[in-house]
Amino acid sequence: MTRYAIVTDLNRCVGCLACSVACKTTNNVPVGSFWNKTLRIGPNPKEDGSGDWPDVEMYFLTMQCQHCGNPECVKVCPTSASHVAGDGTVQIDKAKCIGCQFCAMACPYGVRYLNEEERVVEKCTLCEQKIAQGELPSCVAQCGGRARFFGDLGKGIDSMEAPWVGDITQDDVSYQGLKGKRITLKECVTPYTEADFHTLPNLGNDPSFLYLLRNRKWQGEK
Image (cartoon, rainbow, N blue to C red):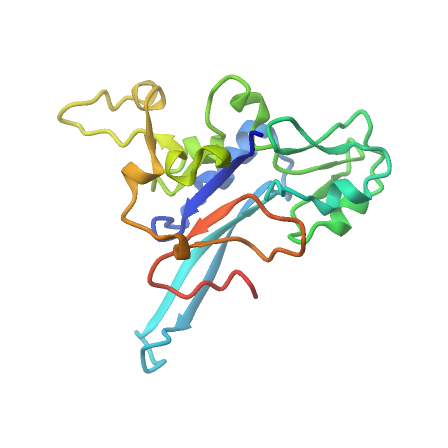
């Protein structure tokens, strides 16, 4: 079964917020609301250091709907507006949503909100309108640090894709040129092991998104 997700290499993320801006622009997210946030974790003392400046470390953590394998939001929805689609993503049928916000209260990550104008709950859709046409989600396509990769977990983490990293001596580095080519996680980032991958706290909801962090302490369980 297909299970679309995003893997984010936190060692490459520079906190530029391009993913957040791209998300708001593509999906017309209202001012004051976010489908995708970028949090700064730290600075915290290094475990092997004195704890004094500059022996500190930090990283940026992107937060959005984790498109869980066993989503709590779906369990509590009284109208089945929140549901798991055939591609494994968690979607909201606005025609069925009554704005009760049970799903927002059940979400372990606080990534849903009520659209006051439409009186329906909204969140990240993983740009379903784009992936249905074979494109990448906007947050992945517009990541300047090549920190975000999209794909089917069933095909393996190594196969997750991002826009190609162009070589100005060989490739077409125009936006359309790079957009048309892909590079995989394995091809793009420095070596990693299974122990380098993390998820947000799993409360039985089985978050799908993975975070890659090397040589720093994972703080996502706090």
